[in-house]
Length: 71
Image 1 (cartoon, rainbow, N blue to C red):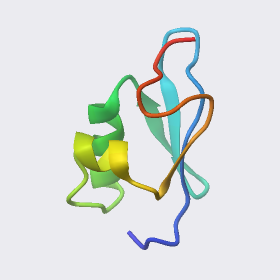
Image 2: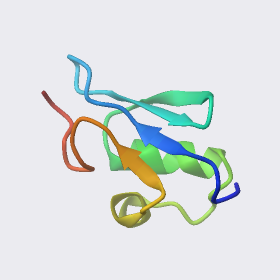
Image 3: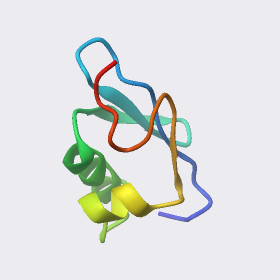
Image 4: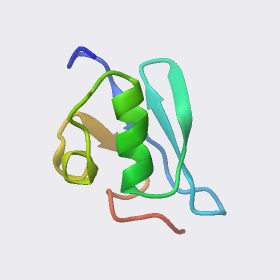
């Protein structure tokens, strides 16, 4: 996956899930960092894990950072 692709994690929904999108592709609902990491691995970032997700500057966190999962 090229680093020019935009990764966006949206604000938490009522159930705590956050939509994850890469460019125009919706990858799924994440309920924690492990879910985000799995979506990124499926999108081609093989070394994505929870630490990568938390520290990556490539991810735009909307409605709170990587530790916000409930409203």
